[in-house]
View (cartoon, rainbow, N blue to C red):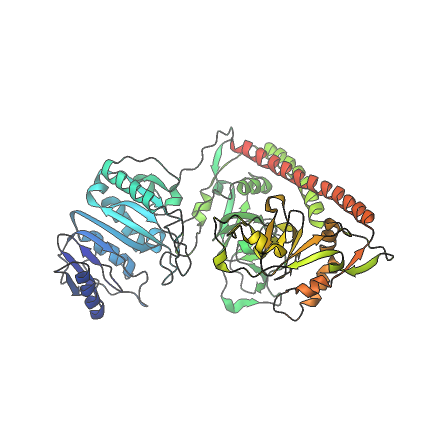
Length: 612
């Protein structure tokens, strides 16, 4: 039985339950009868404001209390241990206090119970850790879709186990066997069975070996800061580095300024006041210089060249502020003192972006100022910091130059005015795809099919989902392409970065083309790569843009593709042009390798500082 709305469900040698709603009481009674409980004891009762049943206690309590308090909070009676007007706090307190001496409980709670800093929340967690709790199971946000997207955890209580164990077991479930969309469709890879086995073994034997989804944390560690935070990620063991340099906390070398968003009434789009930035989405790899809004009310500031850290969804990414700005709640500014070079600290933090962990908030992950200040870093002498920064910046200049080559290179065909211009379908076979039925596609069929998801901008996307029966290759041979042919998406044919056209790779030889994809196959008049490089040109981009101007999205018809005007020099000239472009691309590819080499050099140099 599960409770709905206000109160809890209890079970033991006899079955009992409370709910504030008479309708829910009746539904619960019917539900229990249908499940074989002949004498259910379900009462209309408010556990939070009434003391009538306070002296009842139970062997097992299973509950999914309300995630939110009503506006204005709760007015409880005076017998609760924890003083609060928050329903989620009071329900957990009630359950803990109404367990028998060998009582057990499993409670689904919102994440506020896990990490909120209010006094009532901290007092509740302290009481649980000391007397009741033995495990916390973190569930992914969305397990209650479509009813609620709130992130939740399960608190597992057992008074006897809690007395025997000096640790709390933390389990993090990322996959409960269903996707996190509104329909909650079944998926492979559920971690529930592993989690159940781990919890049972810990209860029964006290034995435990750390796994990717579970770890133990001593109760003394949880109590250390006085907030009794129950976010398991917070206590994951930090990697120990065999560094020769002293380890210091970030607060010893820098000031951390948490962002605070101004009231919306002070925002504007006219450039008045300071530029306002909220979070990682606005700076990414390169900070966006032009903000979407400004503010005339300055709450928290970051100055030019302060280090900025994303502190909410995701936690950890860093970058520099390129100007004086106002920062919102999604950012923190890190301002170094004279004991460390800001560039050195930036590279240290950049190397640890994926290791910086937050709280696992109710809706998204977050990290507090205190947690940022507690990050531990190696601190070499300033002279060594300067040497390291100079070495890294030298590598970065090479990377930036190579990236500029890669980003700016585009194969170009200089058209001779004496060349004949012809329609594409006069020098190549242009075929449209077939509208295969969704029921034709099965993963164990042998024949691959190219869909619009396979065609990127000058890139073939190896997304092999669903194949066609073997008989289709002869039955639908007119829709077949082979390795080296071209495919072009006819839906959203262009995006800002270019035309969606790709070369069919060797691994996709002898395959069929689905609807809204066109295939282009060479004839004796054409080198297919000459056609490909021309399709990548700005001329073709503008042609597609013009043909699809009246549409909601830039789609291309098969007729317009066939009618595309294309230069047609002799096949020898086409081959020569393709050879020249391929030599250029070898140099571009060499720059890509150069980027990889020097990015690794930077990683290795920073890793040496950490002692890796």
